[in-house]
Amino acid sequence: MSIVRRGRFALLRTRQTLSVLDNGWDVLRRIAMRSDELVYRVGPVRITGPNVPGARVPVYEVFAEDEYGIEWFAQGLGDAPTLVDIGAHIGCFSVAFATRFPGATVDAFEPTPSTSAYLQRNVDDNGLAGRVRVHQQAVSASSGVLVMADNGAGSGHNGVLHLGEAGAVSIEVPCVGLVSVLEAAGDRVDIMKMDAEGAEYDVILNSPPERWAAVRRLVMEYHPLPGHSFDELETYLAGAGLTLVRRDRYTDGLGLAWFSRDELTPA
Image 1 (tube, rainbow, N blue to C red):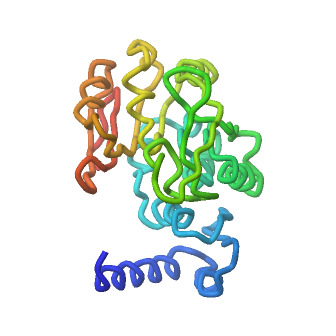
Image 2: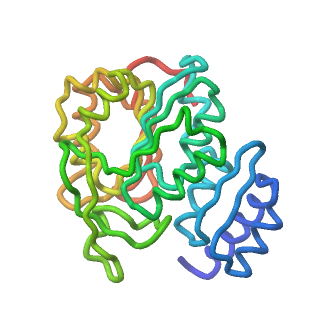
């Protein structure tokens, strides 16, 4: 990123911090002081995370930019939708969703131990332990053990996509099969959100197509995994009854995509 682009991005984040966060000035002060942790307050929501760039990003994606289009994508689901959050990170999406829909139930999966600890902390701090279940597990096509990269709490470079990168530590984490995830949710998932840092290809392409009948809508970040392309995911999910309704392309092989089993009002 050029100096000019970095400057523009820093200005954007500063504006978002002051306009969206109730304690924006305190957050900026703590970033400048290089505090170990940051606490973000947005209305009734309190999110705590490590003071590293990767941990800050989802706070702005969810609360400032509404990257996932929560209101739009949850249209017609009522006040008690079910959510499965695969790659829940420190909990921004899960907490925002459960706060917005007071009857919602959430299964949040985050395999990195240090990041999952923040996820549980944020669920507890927002009084959501009764409705948001935290699973310190990865989700895969089948249950077992997954080898992934761990770059520290809240890092955006934790996952199979980043194995072998400089500075990354390889760890083994327990993983649960997608079929078991769906069964635990009662074979009814109104929304599945997936940000699995490259593992989405294994989770989706190696799962039984008929089991996707339990999923009404899916929003996922897809990544540039060697040997794979987004077209594979779109074709597979179409065969499982989930139609691509929107796609935001970031760079080649990287973007966000929304799939639905029913028609939606355009965003």
